[in-house]
Length: 391
Image 1 (cartoon, rainbow, N blue to C red):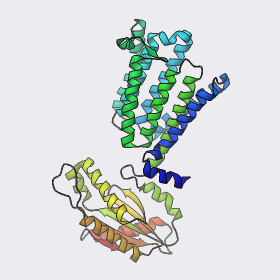
Image 2 (tube, rainbow, N blue to C red):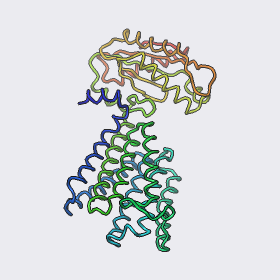
Image 3 (tube, rainbow, N blue to C red):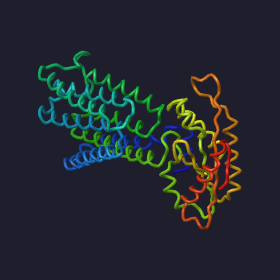
Image 4 (cartoon, one colour):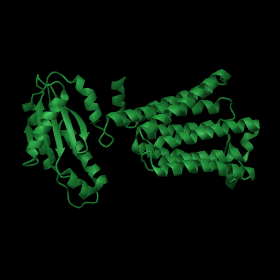
């Protein structure tokens, strides 16, 4: 199955991060069309499980200080609570009320805005402002509804299913723009948010059904929870910039290294100076180009981004002389390359320095091998750069 997915990913690059939310979306559709009406007991089970998944998702995001999906969850959950309140208060007539019309419009508009907000950490003041705006919208909606004002009346009073013209238009705009955005980024969370957006649209469209809202709300909650778990796992064990394994992965993999191996360290020369000259964005572009060059030159070793300016390579079954030859090949490849950076007229020349160390019988773990290579690199670095040394 894994080999099949790898082959399919060559033709469909988005498949890796899309098949899981797409599968859940399909299950939700089939569950709604084939098995409704569900029993009250089953609906209650889905209801409480969905709330639990939302709370777990929020807890994980707070713990890992991640912002982007959390307001998506808050918005969807608040809308779900208000929608159920309106259904209990007005019965089948809730669709005709200004409260519901304004709610469906606010939900669609908020989800679009929240999707396209820049990514930043959760524990910041501006997130409190966003949260206050979300809560204030419900107060505004209540005031408008009390005055009999419906925002959807600006585009007429017609509706499709249980969505008025304006909310349907906003959901349509969101569908197109979010699809284009996640097709470009292809990230786990962005892919999941696209399907969640569609599921929330369907939860309002089919809200008159006894199970429509709960089924699609439940599927969206499960989709978000699984995508958040996968995303957090990836950022823990993979470098977000290059996609390489991270320092955490090295620590985790070290216990499974073979009896014979060598470790190579690649250090970007003059990293601090490059950071000042090019800035964060341009430097990230250069790092990705260096990473690509390393991958093209060394196709067998396992590569880790160990720190901002440092890469580590594991050469399984090779002594330090064999590893040295490969490290020297990488160094020369980068030194001879000309890196083209947007906004700069002339190509940029960069160099790296390297060091290798071989696993000895006396070494208790991979950290000792790595430490020996690091010391050799520091010793050589005192005199010159753009070299490869042996420990």
